[in-house]
Length: 139
Image 1: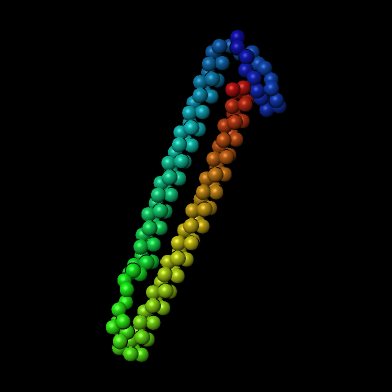
Image 2: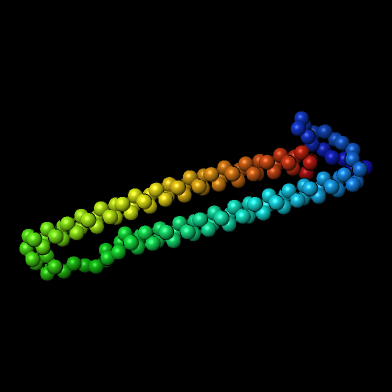
């Protein structure tokens, strides 16, 4: 006969046969393995999400600053007031587009932050539930 300790109301020792002890230990091992697999899966999913968000960020950043390094020559505005006006309108339009893209990027960042917080909460819950199970079996 072997002893199992643990329970809902505190430590309690029970005498069980080897067969029952082995079944319980086997089930505990299965649950621990399953929990470890879930944690690994969650970590892999989080890494993939972060990588996808980095790619999205780089694409958006490239679009935002597309053509920003092109210098304008003085002759491009040599058309007088009409040329300056059209250049200013183009700059205003580009600035508005960049603002919209930055706003979308900010929303994606907020969603990522929320997803990370949810993941942290879920991982904590999983950890606590596994600790409760482990304490119940006296491991």
